[in-house]
Every structure is written in C-alpha cells, then in structure tokens.
Length: 133
Length: 180
Image 1 (tube, rainbow over the protein chains, first blue to last red):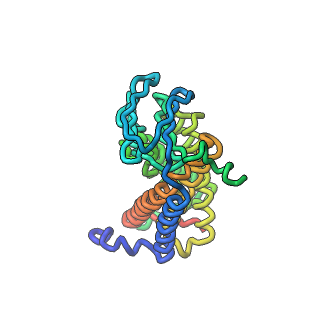
Image 2: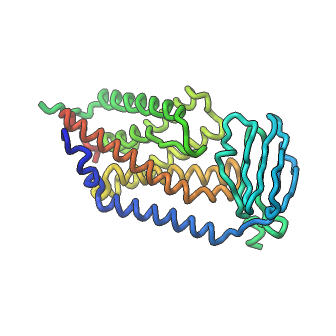
Image 3: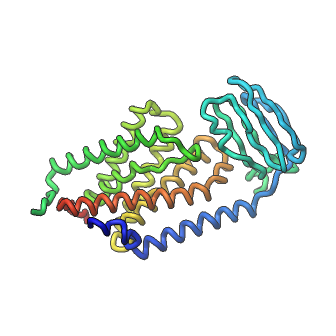
C-alpha cells in the first residue's frame, strides 16, 4: 500500500472495464467517421445578428467581416473554405474557442453578442426533415 | 483494530450527509476551474455518488446526486436556468445507469467501469436534452464523438479516484460494508 498503490494501477481495471472502455472509444471514433461521411462541405455562410438574418456569403470567397452586435464588434473570418470568429466583444470568448467550421449544418454561436453563424449547402436549406420527404 | 461501520440508520444518514457535502465542495470548486473546451468539466463530484452507490445502493446515490445538483445550483445561482436542467437530466440518467450496471455487473466491473458508464450516459442525456428540448437543433449531435471520448476519460479518472479512496480507507482500517 505504501509504495505499490499506483505501481499496479493497471490491475485496477478488470477485463470487463477494459472491454467497455475500448468499445466506447471505438463507438466514438465510428460516430465521428459516420458524421463526416454523411455531411458535406457547405457552400454558404449565413450570419444572424439579434435574431435577424444579416448576411449570406459564399464559403469559397475569402474575406474578413465585422458584425455589430449589442456588445460591440464580432469579427468573422472566412478562409480556406472554413469560417471562424476571429475576435468578439463578448466577455467569455467562448465563440472564439469554438474553432472553425465548414460542414452543412454546423454552427458558431456567440450568445452574449447574439451572433449566430450557420453553414448551408448548395440548395437553400438542407435539414433532416427535408431529406425524409 | 478494524473499525467496522455498521449500517445503522443514524450512521447511514451521517455518511450520506458527508458525501453530499464533499460532493458539493468539489462541484463548486470545479465550476471555478478554467476549461479547455467551453462545455466540458471533469465531473469529479461524481466520486460522491459512486461511493454512495457502493456503500448504500442506488437510492442513496440518487439522493446524494439530487441534493448536490439542487444545492449546488442554489449556491452558484444557476437554479432553473437551462444549464440547471442539463445538470439535473445528466445527473439523474448517470445515477440510473450506474445503478443498473452495478446491480447487473458488479462481479465484472470495477468502480472504473461503473463510473465510465455514468459519465457516458450523463453526456448522452445532456446532448439529447439540448438537441430536442432546449436548443432544438439536431446539429448539436455533431459534438457527440468528442463528448463520448471525453466522457470515457473523465469516467476513468473519477473511477480511479473512487478506487483510490476505497483502498486508502482500507489502509486506515476503515471498512465500509459493501452494499449487495
């Protein structure tokens, strides 16, 4: 107990534990592959500010756009077929940490500054209930 | 001398109260920690629920979790906001599935396995709640692979900690009767 507590830490895992952990990691990698397979790179970037549609830009067209929200400026950058929030006037900067997106249906949201950025496909909206028709 | 904790009603109440208190402290300190990703946290407070499950069975774990979630929300001032409902949904589903796994597979799984199951269903319930009730955006499920992977790792850490606490309690010759 004095020295060996962490020495044989691997023995704390039973075979069933290891199987479960392996299965869950495999499941998460599989669902990642599944999501990548069933989604496509979008064509349009739609930006909403305070619940109102603000702009609809081509994803292929590289540009830097400044959006004015209630707290101040949010800088949106489109580069190499990806969109990211480069800078925002919100306190927590959660939207900046969300990274960049490019696939249909993906979203970047800045809740404090009320900016929503959504990727759309070639047709106007591809949502799940359209596909099932 | 081996100190044997008998499960008298009073001792059970004291143990569960201590677990609620310790879980609450972890829960509150955890909320102040900086996070690498915005919606993730390690969920270390689940150690208290796991120990309650092992010592006194699933009703005790349910009790400890409910008290922690509600008191924690009252203290942090997040009660009845969307994050609170996510927290309640995640906590309840984690305890239910940990209880089922414990009843069904306690001879196969260690605390680590049970805790991974809890973390997994915690995240799954939160995603489902967010996707169909709160945000109503099915696209939330894009986060699923990442959250699944995260739940496995936090589940392992919580399980290792609980196992360590149980071992240490044994070293101090304190033995808690295992609930069967």
